[in-house]
Every structure is written in structure tokens, then in C-alpha cells.
Amino acid sequence: MAKAAYRGTMTNLPFGFSSQDPDDPDKGDSSQGRSEGGAGGSGDMPGFGFGGMPGPGGMPNFDIGQLGQMLTQLGQALSHSGGSGSGPVNYELAKQLAVQQLHNNQRTERPSQDQVKAIEDAVRLAELWLDATTSLPAGVRSVQTWSSVDWVEKTLPTWQRLCDPVAQRMSSAWLEALPEEAKQAAGPLLSMLGQMGGMTFGSQLGNGLAQLGGEVLTSTDVGLPLAPAGTAALLPANIERFIEGLDRPISEATVFLAAREAAHHRLFSHVPWLGQRLLATVEEYARGIHIDTSALEDLAGKVDPTNPSSMQELMGSGMLEPKTTPEQQAALNRLETLLALVEGWVDVVVADAIGERLPGAGALGETVRRRRATGGPAEQTFATLIGLELRPRRMRDAANLWRLMTERHGVESRDRIWDHPDLLPDSSDLDEPLDFADRWGSGSADLDDPIAAIRRAEADEAAKSDDEGDDSPKRDEN
Image (tube, rainbow, N blue to C red):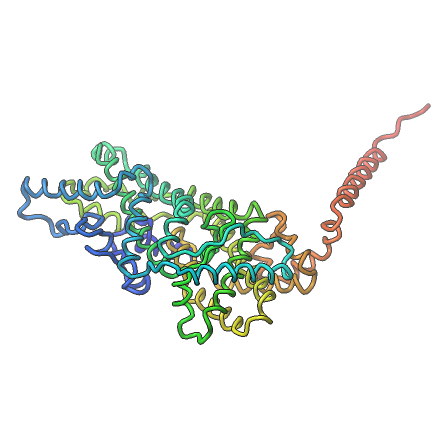
């Protein structure tokens, strides 16, 4: 799964040095992720990957004037980077492209005062209902109403933390794999390639953020705490598009989504290790990215310094495709399971909180599940970033486990599982939730009275020491 997904990463979005058009129809509606001047372009700015330069057929009429024009175009591209090309991803460029594409696609509607009030009221009501279905207290400290552009700008710092490890490792891995002869031949071009890589990553990330910004409904819609801590945010324009064809009032959808947002924030605010663990798992995966050096022996002979498209062809040939290691696969599995546990818990808590109160809760919940199953924003984002496909089956399994825990042990005991990461179910527990529930029941007394558990452990240790003393050789008194 992961290897195939990562291969998709190398040919689509965002960290693949790919020669494929970022506006590939496989990403969804072709009207999204497209800007004036072509893919990755901005107005009269040349496309990335030396877009518009001579193709693989060569330059039969090449002269010094053409070389000068090529360098001029490259300089113009670099000048559009906003002076932020030193890192593995040019985030300033990503933001500029995302905002421009959202404007082009007319996805920048500003919230009205009525929408702002409706969202604030919905979050306040949802918090009251959630109090009865979870022992975790409210985690929302601020309620905001965002446009798509607001979402891009205010979640970009978290995207930077997510993307930097993968992009940094991808950028350095293939350079490290170059033979020494190729490095010496490239010389100063390596730093230029690094800057171009940052622009390429930034361009493709900008396309991805523009698509997501036009679709996401809340700040936690992708299962991560993207917004500032304690900030609940809903996007009313996207919510209106979300309910088209559902025949449900916007007020119901707003309360339903507000409950999901508030439930996510209860987890992320009061389970302090959770957000850090999610991001650290991405970083762990990135550290293992490795390029097979055996495929690069003839690199120097394949790159024509007078034809930039030869480097682009090399980048998209699969020669630089990373190989998934067992350690990386384990990290992907842990991340998938953790995200499924978060989403499954939210599903159960929200269903219990609003199921009897909103007539359309069932239809809205089914729409959200179908949205995931058909590759919604969360799945697309993670498949794009790290080659991870979030499987809806795991989310359903996680929800079944949380439901079983609620029925067997009650709300407080169920939520106590989040006290420490070692207490969480793993992927095998999602396969056998009854076994996990039985084990939790047998250990619940210790969790209810940790002091008694410590005393029992001390008593066991003392008894063990006494037994060892009794087994020692007896000294002859005579």
C-alpha cells in the first residue's frame, strides 16, 4: 500500500520532483489547482520545471542567445520565489499560489456577520451536548469563522512542520546518492537545484493547499490540529457546498460539524502527547527515506547541462524514487492506526451527543463517512505528503472498538485510555476489539486506584526478595 501510494506521490503532489502536470485530472475537479499561465505558474511567470523550455527533442538551432534567454527565464522564476527559497519548501510561494488559485476559482467568500454568529452559537451548543458524552473537558478557547484563504494562511505553520522533514530528506537523499564524479561535475549547480527544488515543492504544495482550502469544512477536517491551539474554526462557504443535495438545513450541518470540531479539540487540548505523536511519526518516516544509489551510476551521462529538460526527465523517470523500508512501513502503520483511533472516537462521541437531537444527524454522518471512503481531503492529503492512504475500514473498526468500550466500561473508563500512549489499542486490537475490552476490564481496578496498584507492586517486589532470601544456602550454626 505505502509503496504504491508513494509512487503516486512521485507523480502527483507534492514532493516528487515530478514532470507531470500538477493539474492532473486524477486529483479531482480540473477547475481546482489551476492558475493563470498554466500549472505552477503565476501570471507571466514561467512554469516550474523549466516550463516552456525546449523539450526532449533537443535544440537543433541552439546558440548563445537562446542560452541567455533560458538563464533570464530562470532568473525570473527565482525572483518570483519571494526571497524564501533557502529551505526545503518555498512556503511563501506555496501561499501565494494557493491564494491566487482560490481567487481564480472564486473560493474566497468572506463570512457574513450572520454566519459568524451562527457558528459561535453552534460551537457553544455542541460543547454543552458533548459534556454528557465524554469525560474530557472543553478544549475550545476561541471560535473563528474562516474563508478558504484564512484556512491556508492560518494552517501553514503546521503544514510547514509536517512537510519540512519529508521535503528535506527527499532533497538531500538523492544528492547524497550522487556519485562523486557527478557532484564535482555539477559544482555550483547543486545549490541552484536545491533552490529550484524548494520552488518545485512550494509550487506543488500551493496547488494542494488550494484544492484542500476549497473543500475543508473545519480546522480539524484532516484529522490533525492544524489551527492554533484551542482555536475552533469552521468554513461556512464550504459547508454550504458540502450539503448540496442533502436536503438538510444549513443550521443542522453547522451544529453537526461544530460538534466534530469541538470533539477534536477536546482530544488535542487534553491529551497533550497526541498532536506531538502524530507529527513525530511523520518525522520518523521522513528520516528513513533512502534513494537506491545503484540506479545513479550513469547520472552524469544522462544530464545535458545545455538542456534543463534532461534533468526534469531524470527527476520524473523513477530513478530517484525512494524505497520504503520496514521501519518506514511500521511508522506508517502506527500513524494510520492513531488517526483511525482519533476519528473513530470523534464519531462515537458526536453520535451520542447529537444523535437524538438533530433529525439529520444520521444522513450527515453517512455523508462524512462516504466522503472519506471516496478519497476526501484527509486521505488525499496524507497520500500526497507521505504516501499514506487512510483506510476507511480502519476508521470504522476504531469506531466499533470505542462503541464497545463505552457499552462495557462507561464513558470515563473509555476516555482514560487516552491517558498514556501505551494504553492505546494497536492495529491488532482493531481486529479483535472484544479481546481489548476484556483486557481493559481486568486491569480497570488498578486504573481506578493507582495508589493501591503501586502498593501491590511494592508488596510483590518485597515478597520476591523474601523468596530469594529463603532460597539462599543456610549457614551451619555448628
